[in-house]
Image 1 (cartoon, rainbow, N blue to C red):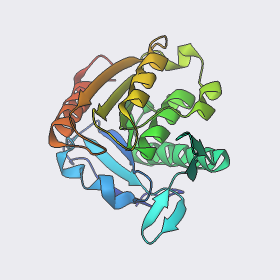
Image 2 (cartoon, one colour):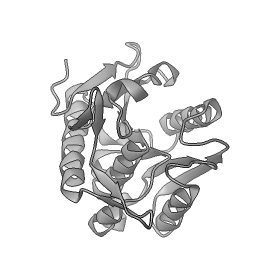
Image 3 (cartoon, rainbow, N blue to C red):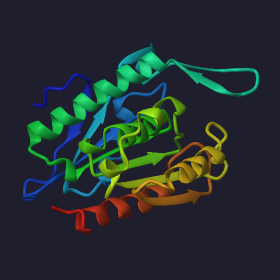
Image 4 (spheres, one colour):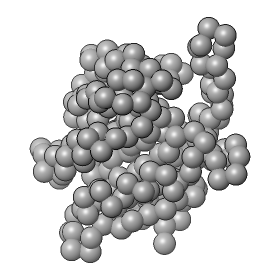
Amino acid sequence: MLDLPLSFLQRPAAPAISRPWLLVLLHGVGSNEQDLFGLAPHIPDRFHVLSLRAPFRIGPDAYAWFDFSIGPDSERSIDAAQEAESRALAARSIEAAAGQWGIAPERVVVGGFSQGGMMALSLLLTRPALMQAGMVWHGRLLPQVVPLTAPADALRGKQLWLSHGTHDDIIPLAHAQAVVQHMAPLPVTLSYREFPGAHEIRPAELTATVAWLESLTTGPAVR
């Protein structure tokens, strides 16, 4: 049994896999570790799947990585201290899980939806040594983490999946396009897709994401 600083659910890789990968999933605000863990049956069996629960309880079975508020101008402000604490706890959990399972960072992917996607992107930018790739569904870039971005050399060879709904009414599509612009000068291989839909992961988006995950395990980054 894994010993991690955050609560979690896990699905082990298939026993026959000699060099498994690790996929860490981070849920959105108001949800819990059960949410994205429901996608585990769709994830290739060469991956251990680990779904983490955010540390801040906001309701019955509802958790968040950080609190936020929306001003009259529709601008969002976040609790930066909570975000920093959550990012540190998630990083420790990723590092501990990979270590206990014997998985090198070159075979670790960290992904999330909505607020969890923001955390996944933040971890890729600030702690790239923990992982090979980040996976962001319907997220955005947190301005607070931009000054903390690792040097370009530390990001070289990393990969990022970024997808968004064209009619997302919670986190508008413009936020995803802003991430694309931000990543352009960085030495990260970006795979960006837009899908018809709102703030949700529809089957076509999941299928495309899984195909990307499979490509990671057979590409030049494989060790």
